[in-house]
Length: 466
Image (cartoon, rainbow, N blue to C red):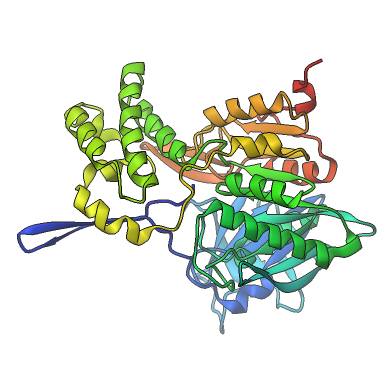
């Protein structure tokens, strides 16, 4: 969630072994700018809307429907192109499974249409025209890049400022909500967080700093939208669960929407992932979980101290539990690495990849203090941010904050994404039905309703003491 471990390479030199351990997320490869004219929201008729954005791969696109289906579009190899592709074949979600019998073709840039051949979405759609204002704003002496995207409607509308997760990619390029929400009547201000895209500075996971940046973005959005903004608030997922409510309180934002975030500290995120690792492996007894908690407390102390303290306790739990049958099943966000590699490697490499993460940040006081309308959307099978404790905490907060709504998508993984399990691995296939519509409608009407079966709604009004 805050960051995924993507590189863990042991390097052997001479008679010794050097373990190189690092957490970082590589930005996606730059997309082909010649395809940028296809980005946007397309009206496919009968209330169907799809957003087209770049995705990993220089000439690869992603089409995401308001209903939740999402396709990766790769150039059709059977078609000859003079320069850039215009004919694409879709695959399901983030898998390599083809969408059988379906092809996608884009018109010339000035025609602004897309044609879907075959399948339930067959037809031609025209790219919607939004009023887009490119902008820069300052935070802590840095110049950050953003843009305001407004639908062409009569009267004032709500505007949502998009708050990043932990990704290092440009939100201005890759954020799909900047098209889906305006297509539903909600304005959007999207910006590249510090150290990403066109924004200055170094990448950071300091929540206080990031929330200051979000506050500056909201002020810019209010100034640009002027009287066209009925209200301005925050929307974001994952790491934004820590940043957006904090920024909301600082800026007195009119609303906050959080998707698949945590109402616990980042240290708790690692702990809950470790517990899930063990339960998945069949080690779900209270005794094993209690022992695993000892381990995560030790690794958490090392992490929170910036690799300066806690190594004695870490050695102690390694010695105490290293021969247990469940020990090797531990992964977590970082605990598995801490157990696998020697202290000297952690001391050496840990601080080198530090990005200022607010490891011990407790979000609950902010959640209790924020008084404006607030929506949390949770994933019941979240592998990155297990939601059980967050749901419990939010329900406790909800008892005194009746404008806090909670919606649980019980079969969804992180991102509110559905999946199929094959050989013990998850293949992500689509966004949960009803998710995008829920977010748009809640921002418009502040009423948590889902038009599909499955999601569980915990309405703040219904939770209020009678």
